[in-house]
Structures are given as structure tokens and as C-alpha cells.
Length: 504
Picture 1 (tube, helix red, strand yellow):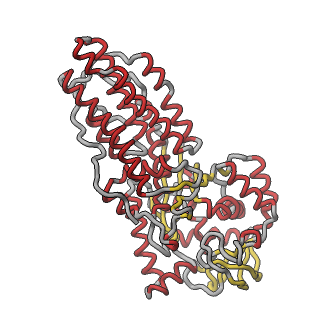
Picture 2: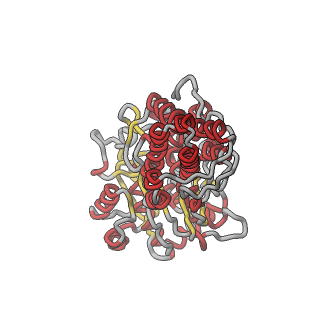
């Protein structure tokens, strides 16, 4: 079965911050997990590089839009590498094949009768590159996202008949209640549709930084239209000579932050319908990472630098913290102090110490070889159906819930050590019970390492190598399936103590 997961493409008017890392990490967890299940996976991320915000940012910095896009796109590519993302392609909307395919799709929409020339007047946010309706405005005619005061603008350009899709979109939301998740965001998108859809500007007349409208090169395609088609266009040229859309379209899961819900849950489906393309199966909307009760944003100055966190603590620690601290799908507060607490308490102590302690006991009591014991009943019951539970959670995009299921077993293994006290069994000469306990601990760690691999890829790989069990397929994550007799090796400190905390 083909599995296609996408992030939104990130805007290059500023450098990446932790919010961008958050979405990319979540998508990577899904991609890695599905590969563990043997699925054919395609994972897409990239950058959105046209439009007024980029042109304005470039002007402020005294560089061309292309120079700014090249510089910041590379930073986003570096971020994907730094967080350990296994994306199959990184799209840029300045890629010539993307631009040509967008023109083809927009021409198709025009030919299908969904485009006309018109004028529009409204409250325009240059940072969102979007006209705001009266119901979307914050107090004082401000953008609710960027908190800047908006001005009325009037434009004459080409329009997309979004209103023509009022009934099809109502039908879509009526028949597919899982099209948008979580439920609150489904209700929000549905309410927006039910208010009545207004036609959308398809082009911009006063800009030159964009993709030219194919039948009117005096205008460029509206940046959101250009961007929303990337999830399809990428498949047409990601592998030279292949059209991967035949295999992977439509997306299985599309991840977005909640501030772009309208574009992806309402406008994108309408554009796809107008172009005769199949709709994505599910759009999942996550919340904001909050500092000082505000969305993390470069413009507000309240950011934790993901590159600095990774340099100090490693990418696994960042991946774990973001998906453990904030329930995926909800807003949640983060802080350097919270990061350090999670790192020390859960990663270093609960998993790191458990791993080194277990391996040390096998080396001390069984000369480094995993004994041929049996998993005790209580442990077996606690691990029953764990791979299926984790898979079910991730099928529902419950990324944090799946991690919680895994971590409950990490805590359980720690309690098991304290309850069974293998050092006492060794003193008593109770070899049979000691073999069972050591085997259960080693195999429990093996199962945890397999299931945690999408979240902690580096640490899990090191732990599996130390346990002489490098196969991380989901089918292997069964307690009691690990072979006895294999030699363990020291794992060192999976999460060494580090002086200092992540800084902005």
C-alpha cells in the first residue's frame, strides 16, 4: 500500500524556527513508522518561495527575491537534515518543473470555466498574503495571526470561482467527517464553508515575483494557488522520468499548522476539484508551540533555536521533547526548563539508565550473553498487543499518544527491575528466575527500541546494535521473539548529561 505524507511548504521570508521543525518531525515519525510496516512511502517537504512577503523581505534586506529564497531555502533543507528527517524529496516552488506544472494546472482550471476577470476590495495582510473577511479580523482591523493593522486594498485581476464549489465542499464535509482532524478543526473549516464561499483572487497584478499566468503574462499566479499545487507537482518530477502521482496521489496524510487551515481544508480541495484531481484522504492540523502564551514566531522574537538545541543535546532529544511535551493536535507551552526536565528525567534516567543497567547486569551475571529465559506473565500481559496499539494510534495521527504508549512500557521496565531485584536473585543463586528477568528486560528493551525508532532513530539504532538485534521492522516488536544466546555490548550513555539548556 502506498503512503504519501506531506508537510506544508515553508515560507522563505524568514529563517526556520522550532515550529517548522515540529511539523517536519511529526511527518517523519509517520513516514518512518510506515516504512517499519513495509509500506511504500513518499515523504515530501520543501519551501514556498514566491509572493509579496518574500519580495518585501528581500527588499528590506537589500537583496533580490531569488537570493533570499536561495539562502533561506537552504536553511530549511539544513533543518530537515538536522532533525533527522527522511524526506524523499525537497520541493522548491521556484523549481522550473513545478512552475511549468502549475501553469498547466491553472490553464486547466481556466479551460474548465472556473476563472474570470474581476476586481476585489478588502482587508489585506501582506504577511499572510491573504485578504481577511470581517469575521476573521482582530480588534482594530488587525491580522489575528501577525497582529499588524491592515489596510483596505483593491485589485483587478483573475478570479477563481470558489463559490462554484459551495455544494461539493459541503457534501465532502458531510460525507467524510474524518477529512480534517482534529474534530474542532473539522468543525471550523465546515463552518467557514457554511458561511458562504467568496470567489478567490487567482492572480496578482502588481507583483513580478511569481509564476506568470499562462494566458496573461502581465500577472503572476497568486502565491497560495502556486503553493497549494506543489503536493501534486512534486510527484511529477521528484524522480526523473517517472510520474509518481500514479503511485502516491492522493496524499494519505497532509500535516499543517492551524493558521493555514482555510487554505488547505477549503481552498485546496476546491482547486483540486476544478483541476479534476482526487482529494487528499486526510488533513491533520496541529496546534501552536507557545512561549509566553504566544505562538512561537520570529516576528515576535519568542523562539528556541532548533539548531542550537540539536548541537547541544542531539536531534533525538528535540524530536522526543516536542512530541512528548505538547499533545499533537493541541496548543502547548514549551520552555528551555521543560526541555531540560524531560531530557534528564525521561531520556537520560528512564531510558538511558535502564539500557546501561540492563546490559551491565547481563555482562556481570551471564558473561554478556542473553540467557535463554522466559518472559514472566506480568510482563507479557503488559506488552500484549503493543505494536498493534502503536500502529492504530499512528493511523489516527495520534503521534503523542503512540509515544505515550511506548513510554509507559519504559516506565514499566524500570519498575520491573525494582520489583524483581535481579541482584538479589543472583545473590540467592536463583538462576532460573534470574534468567527470566534478564531475558525479559533485554527483550522488553528491544521491543521499546523498535517502536521508539521513529521518534528516537539514533538512540534506538545504537540500542538495538548493543542488544545484537538490528532488525527494526514492526513485525519484530513482539515480546519474547528475541533470540537468546546473542552477545550484548556496552551502549555507553544514550543521553549524556549536558551542562546548559536550549536558548533562543
